[in-house]
Image (cartoon, rainbow, N blue to C red):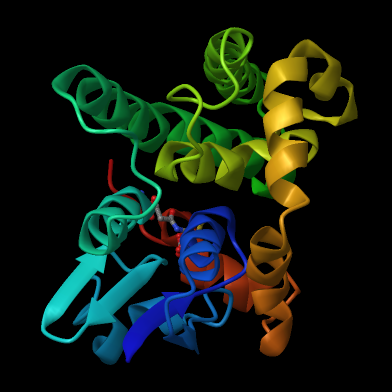
Length: 228
Ligand SMILES: N[C@@H](CCC(=O)N[C@@H](CS)C(=O)NCC(=O)O)C(=O)O
């Protein structure tokens, strides 16, 4: 059975959404990143980048949520747009846009707003600005079409949902009114039974909740290792 290495964080949750939507049987294997499970040799053999999500599907190992979504969609033929080079170009572009822009900027915004040991206004504003800018680009696209690639619900929408549903945590409660079309998509997906099961998956395991010294050591290693 497909092994799914996960936590309740945004990137694993989008893969959980696909697995639930597609009805694929899977074994959920918790990786408690606040306890340092991501650095254990058995997990590094699956993902040398020490991050969730990752999957092992027989002899195929895939890490990075965006790669996993594309792999699973192509394997099952589910949640892909209609055939055609034009829409294939759009699929790849928007997946990479989320992978290289939305995810990293939203993630760094969360880090500097909520977890960095000292308030750094420059870093907070830079990442908030970029996260907001990326979300606004998604919003503009969704102002003209139901889903990211048109009329069909695809892996790009799942990818977008993973981070966009956390906009209040990323940017603050005042952010939602700035991206109403994105909120419309998030609300629609969040209401789906598969999304509710994906979000509830984290409750099947008791993940560590405290962001204490052990968690900071596991997740923010730069705090104890000087590079420059
Ligand atoms: N590009 C990767 C990023 C994965 C990632 O940052 N995962 C986070 C959870 S959302 C993680 O494992 N954090 C633990 C750590 O940084 O130690 C993806 O999209 O899967």
